[in-house]
Length: 293
Image 1: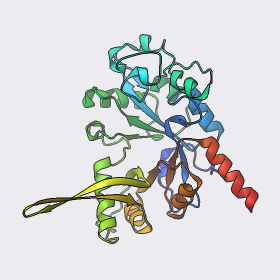
Image 2: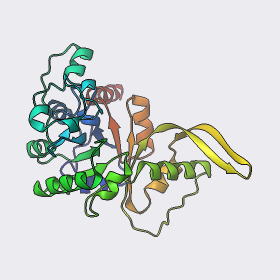
Image 3: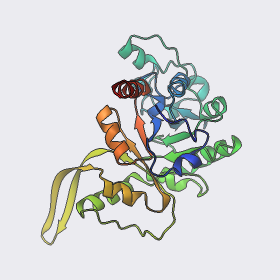
Image 4: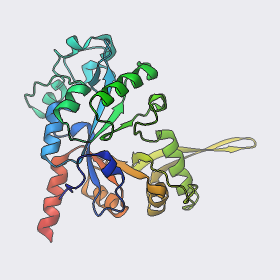
């Protein structure tokens, strides 16, 4: 079963060491189980024993931080255009479950929630907040997020992530955030290509947060005197990489863990957490394992 310990704060979550089972992060609330980034998705994920909920945020025209991932409203909802082109009063009228309903023949009528509404409705839930807003000013977004999180006294139960490093660096230092994706990929590549050499000083007592796919296809570029060489390869975590990343009390979340086999690999590597699309499927895996014992 998914562990139920340390559910009420990311401080507890990220200080976990060599756990028997990784904590489970519901990706966008469990995007395969319910309309993503909605109250229904979050509620279903928690009902299915998610430890942490991952949500994606953007900013509306009037500065409201809302839950939505794609760059265009037409991708998931009955709207069209950028989130930033509309005030929240307009966004609130949309049904952001349109795409999910078409794919699953369901009948959800889901409004786009604000981050404030979600933090208030789930006051004890740890969240990873993924900043996606494609055209927002990083400094303004950081201010809005900081003011919101501090007003909700939620700073100990949230950690920020973004593939855009500018959003992470704009946040104040007292808020938890993942290391940049570029830095994480570079470090992982170095460890794997060097045969397990760890460049992190083991004497340092530093807590950092890293997130990356269990497997990721990349192109390695080597510089030579007369040009450069490019080699397609796949980065796959191993024990040496995991041990290096977790030096000094840091923590690793492995992304895209959506099969029983990948979950078992993550468990053997002692990943601190895994990000999954379906809590329903994961719980079925646990039940099958219990029945096999």
